[in-house]
Image (cartoon, rainbow, N blue to C red; front, side):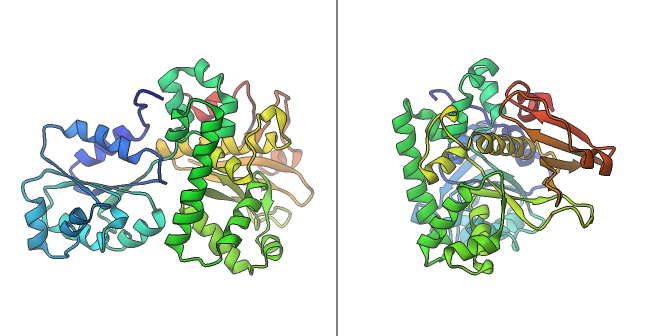
Length: 385
């Protein structure tokens, strides 16, 4: 990846920084996802304005903005029209200080980035209630990659996206060995270090074991009770760890869809990884999809995460579920929104599939379609929504 790849949320962030609401723009996302690369491109839209850039990792900058004293803060920000704060979670009392800047210096537009939703959200949620727009940056989406290189080039590397994911750093690696080394460094330096540090969890081995267990169960329903018994943890602790991993942008939980019918199962969760390169690094398997026994699960996870990026990047509000009956009838993925209910079955092969009769009977007005390698682009590409 030699040239800059535009991100889907760029125009929306610029619009929010330019509107007359005066709200702070918060940009969340995991480490190495491209926030620091995106920010200068956003700032180019305001290059005629005076911009103050502050990095939370740099102590003098941090001290400038963390005083809680409007008069002291004024000495730092007076005369600037745009304030950009990177790695904001490193700044003490960042939420309170952002509130002070917002309330005392309403003429200043503020963009804030942070690598940890756990840390930063906890610090800014209450102080900035009603004062902020929030965006999340993912690894590159299929739509972004298609816009950059075209569909044919993207599709020719489909197996690569399923095995190595789409973190910017992965795309920069020239060969599979380097990609694997990069991803292994990511899980060791971030997942098994930063996440533990942020959460204060002592039993790091248990969290690692749980994450591996979840990685082997993508696309399947997960029982927190069974995970706990296998790991020697109580269910409450398992729930805490899974919540931590979700807030750290590692996984996403999905509940079962139910209209309160006894025959429908809705208590268990499905869990998907938000990047398949990370998932495959966790289990140490970078084999090609044609040479592994979890190809169907990989395909389901890939389509789910790309659909999730599509919805979030384009601010499309829909609820995401799976559906299963006690009889065993099931649908991989269900969307509900705008008064519409849609069911999707994910097939890596091109085989056709009919919806379960119980789905069509229970929800006669719901749509159903199979998503396979022949028709998947219009499921994950924003140009086709």
